[in-house]
Length: 314
Image (cartoon, rainbow, N blue to C red; front, side, top):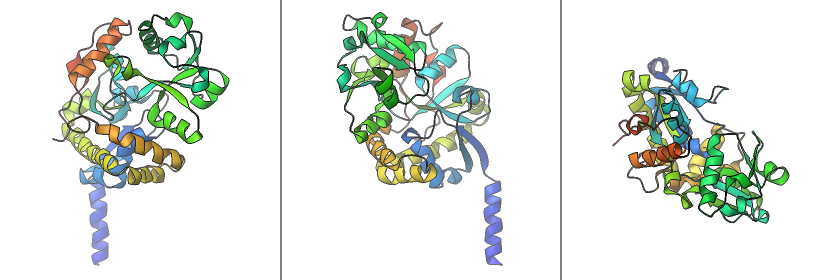
């Protein structure tokens, strides 16, 4: 009888949880570890939530969240900025990583040691205007021009196949592709964006929601961030254990890569911020100014409406 009562109580508790959908920006990786830790450790349930983590469809995470078809998502400051300027009502509520860990990478034999060396080379990207703008802004600092770079769209071709077959350099996140290169024994020249411009030290990735959630379900937003914060704090303090959780939740991932990536990335989640997830207005202002100056935005961003720290735990 006691066992039966316990099961009924558990079922009732499950029924009382608020259903939440969280859409990723890409296939699961160590950027997302805190989410899977929160799920595995029961942090979501402690906050009264049943969180379903899903992959993005063709519409992408931003449109899915903006349309209310998902409550939360993973995005990047660049995408949120573009969306806000186009009156798409998504808002960044937490920075997953404090500083931009991306940059342009090339195998050392390509001879690319500075942005000036991009001249005469082929860049493989995904066809966004921001790519040529960033390349040009770096090259201009050394008296070179993006006009001397061949830019090609490599789609979903992985970095290693592309640089072996079609291109000389590409834009990567070191915490995943760079670490994979280390494991493969491939020496890379890595040109981090943050080494060339403070304005390019933007938040990527970020967690987003839509304006309706903020206005009508603020407690759900607060609860979600309380649980996710615990998840990332656990990953910061226990990278090996957090990696094991991600591997268990997403068994298709390469365990060696996940563990090495997590070791590299865990200290960078919070880095020099006072708390995980904190976003600074000057970071949003710097990058949106850069985008506007480079013709990537039709008008200037209303920075205050693009992000909030209000729902992060103290």
